[in-house]
Amino acid sequence: MIKQVTKIIFIFSIIGNIILLGSIFLTSQEDSKKNVVLAQTKTMHVTAISLSQSPILDAEIDGFKEQLTKDGIPFVFTAYFANGDPLALKSFAENAAHDEQCDVIFSCGIFATRALKGIYEKKNIKKPTFYTNVSEEVVVEIEESERNCSAHMTGSYIGNHWDDTFDLVLKLFPHIKSALLPLGDIEGGDERLNLVREALEKRNITLTPVCMRSLSDLKLLVRPLISSYDLILNLRTPLLIESTPLLVKEVLSCKSIFFSTEKDSIEDGLQCSKSFENGAFGRIAGELAAQYWKDGVPIKNIAPINVLNKASTLYLNKKTLDHQGISIDPRLEFLMTKSTVVRA
View (cartoon, rainbow, N blue to C red):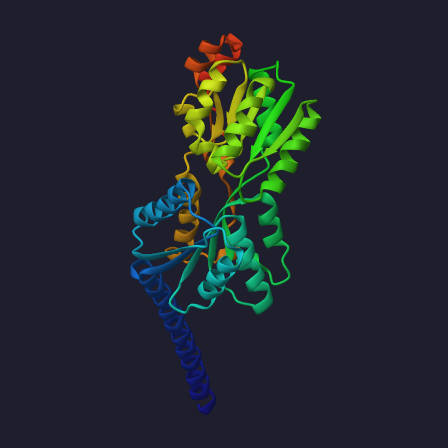
């Protein structure tokens, strides 16, 4: 009889433990749900830092804000621009990394992102950071960093697209044998120059880079050379973008092709662009920030996104090409107007 009573007590004890475990599990699930709801309603305090300010950067910041708004995330946004001063940029990065009121850093460009990565590596800080408009090389540096910075840094970047880009340009304009590349104060200028030079050399196209620092340099050094080169390149150089109207007249008077990675140059009258609307960088970074803040996804599980694979478009200005007497193979033009390319 005692054995039976002991057995019954033992069984009830097991049942009680099962009920207790179930209660703990359900409570844990409820807590998890509460955390997600809290994240959805809690205001995100964002600090943006950049080496300098430009219309391109303004569009990227606007894109980031638009995406947070679209995802229903309330935010307070503060931006710091270093006006080209690397020491000021480092100071802004240090302050943002240590600021307890800052929930997320929006790192704009190569220099700002590298400055933050350096701080995180030296001081083992893990502030959630979403970068924008960096090169593929910077993404690799983050992934291979000693302190595993990719666990709290992700964002949008420009991949090395130049092989595909120049193959396309040569399909459209097979006469190209020489290229002029005006370079100003653009982030990652040396990296981009090396990638462009390598891709052009593979296709037996000679490249001449020209360094310019002001509008006077553009007028004195670049404009006189335009007619001597088959291809003029613009790698989102702010000075060149702002001076596009000055270059249209030079381009129209010769058969040079002006190729840009900036969309607005097409609307200004230049001929060819493989680009994206400037806000795309910021919106994509904003999408990733929403995954972290609203959905609770760890940053280490949020892969950086190559903007050119997601949002790039080829633009041609037929009016300018017709004015120059430059024709495109009708079969290629037909395919371009009748086809949609889907990237897996």
